[in-house]
Length: 223
Image 1 (cartoon, rainbow, N blue to C red):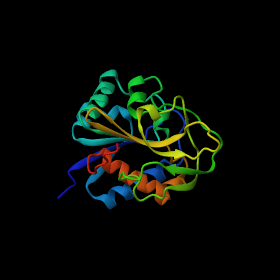
Image 2: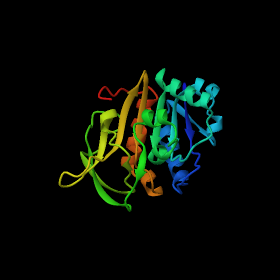
Image 3: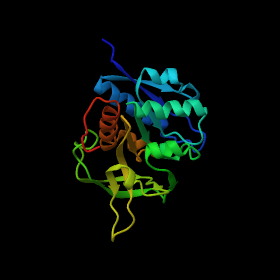
């Protein structure tokens, strides 16, 4: 029969628009087809992220969103309530460059984008390989990305899965994490700036396991 779960995917941008969005969406579709336990529903505008739309959903993905998206205060409350009652929230890359004027969202996703240095190839360290998002990953790997710096270190508020490998005791640079909010699950992955990242099997492992956990289909006790 049809998959029992729907996952809503929002790609609206009112700030920077990533050229990688089509490739990111194609990557998500590949991951969902391989999993088979949920189906993706693309939402072109946050105006469609109504309480009614949330009612039937297992999770919501903010895929490379930016800016102050059109959600009314009651719709904002509905999204927070959806997560607290057991829904999933998944953010990729610029999901943390979204809703800078909505403190409850920043708290929910775990961080707020500040800036990024010039993209470069760096080593990232996988801190926790016990989760569905990370268990197929090596203990560290090199990737060419635009590496975000957040306004405050997310670590006190999240369970870090991956961090940038910083040399000589540099600042803490978490890049992917999970957290619980009420009965709900939040997963965030800061990678995904470039179209080619969405064909990288390490990113697709993160995507696949992160969605499965946030949608309630896989367990991650350390989260």
